Length: 105
Image (cartoon, rainbow, N blue to C red):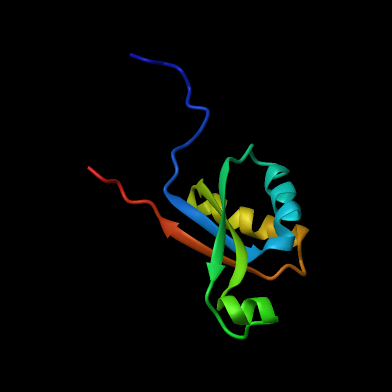
């Protein structure tokens, strides 16, 4: 029998954060300073098709350039992480989604 303690609990959800590109450095700094544990996350460039478009580049292309970060986590930790982010970046416009992870067999 293996008696080695687990150092990391398994994830049951993904916290998805979508925000303007200019917020990226601040957001990653906040995530990397999360006091409960060292987070690992995936960041992606995304195209948000939404209204209103704010400048001529967006009007020509038809989308806004955004960043998306995904953090695999537990649901209760995701809520604490979200509140931590909002506390550190209170004026940030941010969309957050909490998605369940499904076991594929």
